[in-house]
Length: 109
Image (cartoon, rainbow, N blue to C red):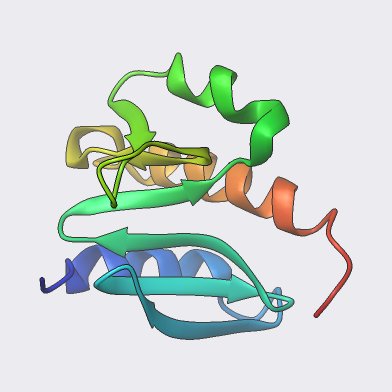
């Protein structure tokens, strides 16, 4: 499944130059790795955000968010955000920061 290249470019701009970021094909889409950990990504037109278990329920309470269920079984600690939830630059930045908060607390790989 192809991923939304425009959304990928928007995420790249937010992460550029501030963190050790690599990109990796993952989940049939694209993952953005920060310090070796998946921070966020894109599957189809949805943004994927790694929230961790502690922030998972709070993230799900936000508009346009739902559990990541790539395998048909929800993955706790990851959410999908529908395109309506990332339309504005400030919304995308908020979601990206959620992913960064989690990965920046992890030891680098």
